[in-house]
Image (cartoon, rainbow, N blue to C red; front, side, top):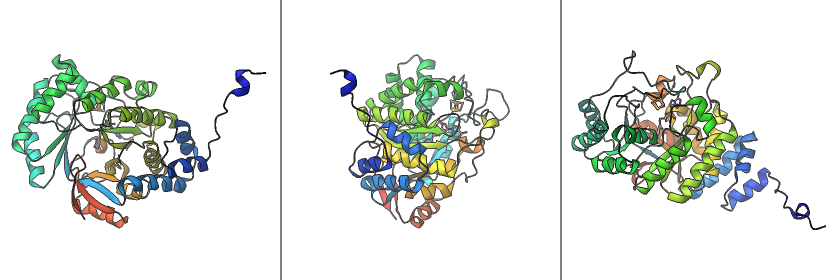
Length: 371
Ligand code: V47
Ligand code: SF4
């Protein structure tokens, strides 16, 4: 009997040993294998594999930069359920910074030896596209040595809607005004039914990916984040990472992958959610390092993780600790217990006490100084 049944190939059995063999020989692991790792509680074994994958790419180097976050406005028409930072126009606590104030903060950062400003904000119902364009131009004049990393894919899509420009034209205008690269926010979980629960007003996962693809084609490097620890499953996290891995195969435009641990306070999701555990944080970072074989950098964002987990993560495949940040609002409005900024010396200490080499980098990962 020559039926298809007889000759069908049975799926290979997934064991930790088969995954380990793949990582040791630099082979890509499958989504099923990543799911297997999420169901394992052998954190140290997963961490060891992630550390190996990281060592091959980055040796003992751990990167950080000296940067400052500026959030021009917290007024946002989306009001995502997980976001404690945003306000409706006119609500108590709503603010919008004048361009002069944004420039003052950028100038101050440059004087304090920052190399980057990281600018993201809400989707304001009244500000025109020119406000954002002029903001970039004004920063470039006020603090010409700073690299401007600004605007998520969500903001870019909004700029296109409010200006009538295509996404490509928005990029051209912003790059001409001084945009140097983009952060990785707004990705949340790219799976649609999760988005419907946590951010129904936000652009779809497919739109996020398409705008990032166009950013990469326009020559901008970006990061990619993943907001985890709310209503999503392990399978959703893997589907999210799989979409990023596929796009990275196509464009090569992603620099770092940044899992963002959900902070539950003051958000509309808080009632039945507590946020993440240290074990989940480390496992997620380690699996990301193993699964995203085409990403050079896995970043532990100490603001959401706390300094201690961020430091321990350096033994679990992480090779980037973000930067000094200076004034963080998004995580702290949602109850993050970390400090609002770290000094450069503080970051260097975290890294060298973990037995790694602190490397100050610029936004595009050119090393500036090893400590
Ligand atoms: O997109 C919002 C997240 C992001 C909460 O690219 C929350 O270098 C946790 O993207 N709990 C903005 N997270 C921050 C961001 C980022 C941060 C640092 C570095 C980079 C980079 C990017 O913050 C949002 C959203 O996913 N967020 N609310 C919350 N309650
Ligand atoms: Fe607005 Fe961004 Fe907060 Fe969503 S996460 S409400 S888009 S500021």
